[in-house]
Length: 48
Image 1 (spheres, rainbow, N blue to C red):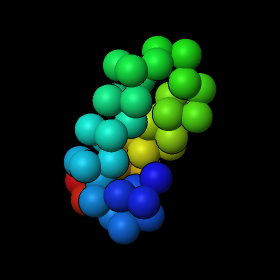
Image 2 (image 1 turned 30 degrees about the vertical axis):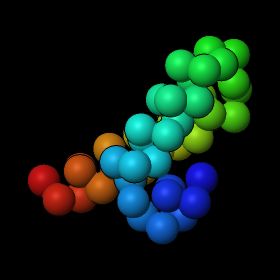
Image 3 (image 1 turned 30 degrees about the horizontal axis):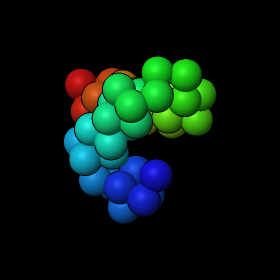
C-alpha cells in the first residue's frame, strides 16, 4: 500500500501479486491491485 501511495506503481503491483501468491484468498490485495489497475488505465487514457 505504501508503494501505491508513493506512486511507485510497478513496485506496488509486484507486492500485491506477491501477496496473492502467498495467499490467493487475500481480498485486500486483490482489491488494491484492482484499484491500481483502474488508476493506471485512467492515466493511460488521459495520455492518449
